[in-house]
Image (cartoon, rainbow, N blue to C red; front, top):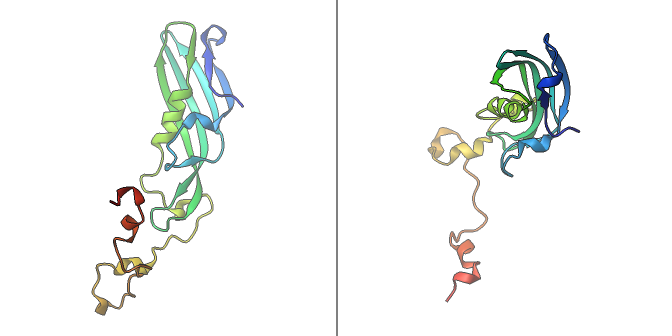
Length: 164
């Protein structure tokens, strides 16, 4: 699988050229607690040169594993950019489009990923027990789940390095 999409300007015909393929998902290089790529970056692009400018138009798509902000469940959502369009100033040589394609997909990430917007939607309902934390018990909301330990300092007591 390709790791970069490099356009060789010397071999680009005047009418432009279509490029289709997949890029290795390692190009995203996201932090561990962020979304995880669930497949390659698929592209179907038309590239054309206009004097000192390279016009790139087409379709981008990549699947990611997100964590729902409501249910904390993992789900797969495909980010698709139907009408990608970007232009690049050029001199001569080669133009690497990889970073621009990567950034375009990342900018299309949902701000608050929800599992009901997944490729295979799931029920996205908050557990009502967690809404009871600051509610009046007389409102008809079940009580919030209780901690398994009454001693709030138990976790700190477990840390040997801080004991005298």
